[in-house]
Amino acid sequence: MKTNIIMKTNIIFALIVLGAATQAGTQNINWRAFEPGQKHLVHLQAGFDYGMTLGLGYGYKLHTRMPAVVNLEYSFPAGERLFDDFKVRLGGQVQLVEWNGLTVTAKVYSPFRRYESNMVRLINFGGEFSGVVGYYRKHWYVAGEFGFDKAIVTHIQHSDQMLENYPDAQDGWYVPTGGNYFYGLQAGVSFGKNDISLKAGGLATQGWKTAPYVPKYAVLAFNRRF
Image 1 (cartoon, helix red, strand yellow):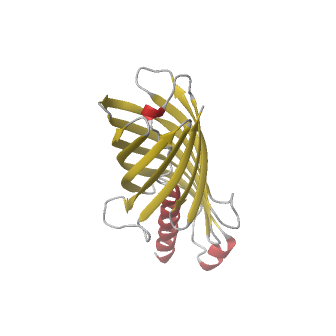
Image 2: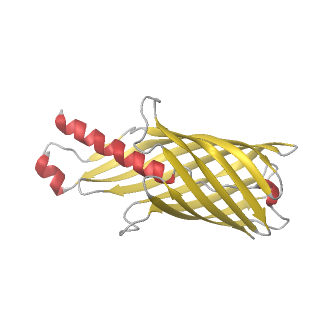
Image 3: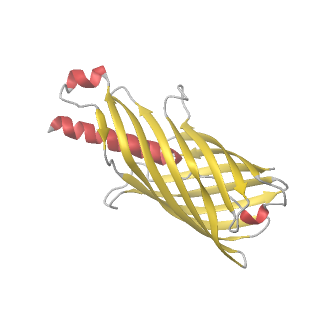
């Protein structure tokens, strides 16, 4: 029983850290700022979720009836070992509604993340879904976002240190392993081929019964369109 509690605690803590560290990191897009011929976006960000996090990404604007962007993003917590823990996210977003500047956007992503401590190494696949509603103009926008990040399947590999203390701890795949809700506000300005945005909000674990130890996030991001 004690081993199971330790294992569940490790899983929950790690997924909250990985999820929160990049939860609000999906590319912010000002749909009204696109100029004819602009199809590519390069994305950089820095945020605060349990500490400093960094990220970069690339997006491609599709030629579709409803404006859509597919993109690949990579993010990681800043520290001495930058590439041990990370999150890769593949997916996209589409503008569903636009009426006199009022815009509704849907985002769908599939994240892959890795976390390692002196007790356990976790590799996780999941799904992330969110909606953004806001008012967009060519040079600025304000919006609100609500979404859910689900850790669908997680592989656990315990360290020798963990096994020395809890020899019954079992490695392997676990399904499912929880998720986080995220919600917040964002605003941005656009000039030339550049977009700068700031978003901030909160986090809650699945079931709304608990919250992460640091239940807030803030992310500053930069897009270059070309």
